[in-house]
Image (cartoon, rainbow over all chains, first blue to last red; front, side, top):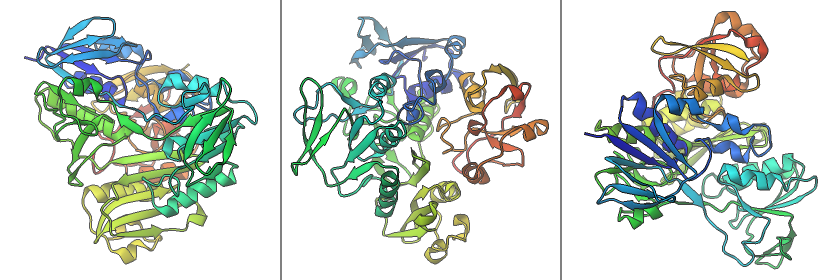
Length: 404
Length: 110
């Protein structure tokens, strides 16, 4: 008999699990523990419309408070779970309260990778992960404020675009030879670098930051080649690390994330995990992955909730991701790692194109720039393991779904 | 406030008073309207907040943009009155609007 379910983590996955558990008829005690003080909210706008002030905080909430009341969800917000005793099936919170469970779901998310060079902790150096990180950055938005962004990934570039739109002078420093090098084709990197430069953002690649300097507050960023970049504000976006400490300290198997199977089960029979914190099998791509993805958090949490209720269902999704930078929308579906060919559809100069990744004739992934049709068609084709004709594929006038 | 009526996939009727300025999707999601999944939270990136707009109200909405058109093309059972609810902003003009939530969201992957 499952009478108490605890969920640790009030992000996308935790919020979704609450929803699914109640919709699927779980009538027992349901507790959601989150270390942030706010009701569960969506994170993607934090670097975009929320940072710019276009969107207010109440619009970020997944549900109003009344939803949690109506569904008898005990919210323990602004409280960290500090200890997990798997043998005793007990969780201890920062305020000393101890909660027992029959089933536990860990939705711990991921935390920002920290810059470790000298000066990295000076005031004026910011990360962007939670709602509370935004106001201190916004306080630095003054016309011509010099913003240096360390890292040219999604967060860095989205934040760069927003800061530029707010009137700041923005420079992005990227360690690799191109921006978003881990997630998109060179052609797509080039397109976005051009877009940023056209809007007045400085993009500097092959540039490693060695220290931050300033008297009591960051004033400049010094790079390995000796160059310096004056800064009123530094924003660091150099990747994320799965949050696993609570799990590993309790003896759960962890390896770049909490290790789970396709049923979201950890190495402890009463504990499940979902979202950015998991290292899980991708059934479609036949290997283990750790994804930082809204879709994965959402779907894995749904699946975990069903499995928690002893309704076995496997997590089997084609991952997808998106990024908004200026007026461009990048939509990515699939995982491209094992490809042996890339096919360009359309002309980047037209500002709408896509790059398709093939292994033989099998479509593995698509990166679509301002091209929602190719993206949506690809979601279906990749899930179905469709085999395409590369010659037809290269003709952008032929729709993707007709490129068999 | 504008009163919006949602017909849920099971036939349930939900009346919600929504403040102008937010989107139809936000009004549905915050109040837990069934069937409006809204995975991407309004970025026009997932097509899981698809709704059918009552015919009498269609003319009062801004037309679809190209990105939304592309997303809807392969959504579950698109119709002429299909919209992504994240792209519809609530205005005082929409007081009384009725929308129907499809039986499913998404596409091949459901």
